[in-house]
View (cartoon, helix red, strand yellow):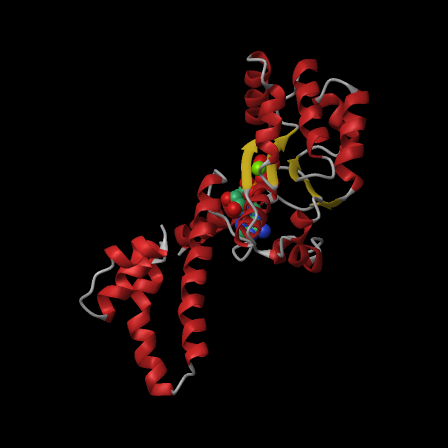
Length: 268
Ligand SMILES: Nc1ncnc2c1ncn2[C@@H]1O[C@H](COP(=O)(O)OP(=O)(O)OP(=O)(O)O)[C@@H](O)[C@H]1O
Ligand SMILES: [Mg+2]
């Protein structure tokens, strides 16, 4: 819209409606909502014009960033709401807190580095992957989460429709993809090849986070091909943080604690 049309259609009945109108045209609803309250505060506290302008714009930027984060979290398709803050680190004493804190900054995504979470069932791999994904979304990176099986289905469908390259390109728009549960369901040769292409297409371009119950030495079993598995692992770990979790299943522990509580209640 040109300045001329803006002026010609702007309301003429005073400053408040002019500001409401300008905020609407600029698509900055927060400014429309906060200018008055901040103006009162500015008068009370003797802010300079520059300070007032900065405060108003800052409100709008904060609102937009938080809306962006919400949108990124929604479109990531996390299977549950899990946070790093809810993760009980005492249960996993071997997990290095400094490494986790570094990953939580999301900087690894800026560098297109990978994260591999390995360990037996119930140790919190999926929880950590979601929690770190949420942190990356907060840091401004787009994220997409799915199970290995669903990733393969997606690629196989695209391949069948003759648009695998386009699909890989589309996936590359996400700065971080999370592939959960590699190893639980074995892949046939075709699926393994598709998986390899996914990893290869992101090598040094976009981050991948993978969780698996199997150590790398056994990935050949899942991908029914030692050579493909080795080539894939080579690309994945070249720039990666590999976290190997050890300990007892959190699920079992919770069950044990519940049973113990019930037993105590029965005795009393
Ligand atoms: N250290 C922890 N602190 C808090 N909750 C935890 C912790 N570890 C696991 N949990 C919870 O226990 C449950 C199992 O964890 P999760 O699903 O992340 O395990 P997993 O390693 O992905 O297991 P699987 O290999 O079976 O998929 C989840 O509800 C998770 O939130
Ligand atoms: Mg899991």
